[in-house]
Image: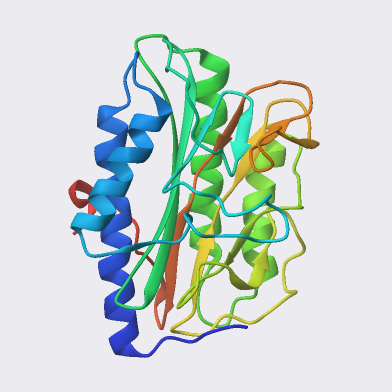
Length: 260
């Protein structure tokens, strides 16, 4: 299903996007050496409930997961990259942490992810990988607009990632979003320009470049959810929800300090 939001629904999407961004910004500030992933999940739950929003994850039970996810945020550390199920792990200096959050409020969902290094250590390879996903995300957003096609976004993202030297997995990527978290169209992280669904004002997309340092192959953790790099290499993931407008694309998941 592909939804086109009306102006009222789009206003709600902006509200939800701002909430997602602000929760992620708060959680990043709290994620320090010694923080437990289960604490992050509890903080996310409290903020979602306080905001009168609903988690898109806690009862989520898709075909690629094993049973309901059962948590309020995805926490992926080091070799984990997608669908990271929080567990009893204490963050260490230099860990590469990805926080991925989707909530719904007012009947509209928004989804975003950030990757960052915990503590004082700054491994240059990890920082470069995070920065590459951020640049790829910016390129994908720049390629989105009315009349463009999904393939234009995929091509822009893939060009940045491949030029940075990272293998690209196409099993999981960006997606449409609206009254539910995962909708058509699928937005792969590489593709051919000029192909795929044509973008229209009112369409929401969650764009999410993610990479693994030296492989494109994923393995599923014993928890039935967490996807890790097959080689144990580090990973990174950046995501924004955007709205297609008459003038281009508007990022809905910018934190407060970055919103105009």
